Amino acid sequence: GAGVSQSPSNKVTEKGKDVELRCDPISGHTALYWYRQSLGQGLEFLIYFQGNSAPDKSGLPSDRFSAERTGGSVSTLTIQRTQQEDSAVYLCASSPRVDARYGYTFGSGTRLTVV
Amino acid sequence: DQQVKQNSPSLSVQEGRISILNCDYTNSMFDYFLWYKKYPAEGPTFLISISSIKDKNEDGRFTVFLNKSAKHLSLHIVPSQPGDSAVYFCAASEMTGTYKYIFGTGTRLKVLA
Image (tube, rainbow over all chains, first blue to last red; front, side, top):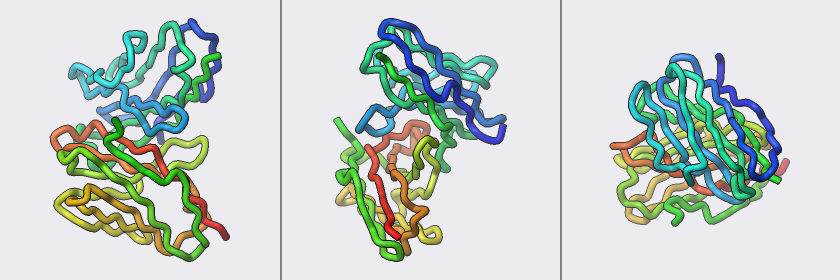
């Protein structure tokens, strides 16, 4: 597609429920990233995928968070047993190369609210 | 531990004047820096970058300055326009791992007409 597409744009969920957030990167972009922005915070790195290489999961805040990327394209971020501190805007981005000196292209994000 | 800091959460500037947004970092290994601009309900968009081998990079109305000894960079917008009103994030990375940027908390710029 023309840009990075994320769905849903908004998600309200009850504490303890699982949620799945989806990201469709720009066609042909081999690198995909997940970040999140909590209230009053910067963008926090979560996970990075590059081609068929093992993902860099060093930013995932707990084992309740997991992500996969199927077929080198679409990615899903799953949060199990959601907690109120998981409330944030989750941003997906992609870039055409590992060397992201030209920046990423971000999607519009999924605003997750855990009540 | 904030490795990238934007100490001004907001800034108001009159249209036509210069906007100066500041960013400080603590990690001396950072050697590549980006500025992003974010409008409400949209993802951040890439604005301008600078490598540590330079101390200035200019693109139209936008100029980024880097002071390595002070671990400080700034974004200058001249002249400021109402459409520049947005949240601006600086981000830093190490060249050897340029896929992982550390972002600041952002500065909300409001350009007054």
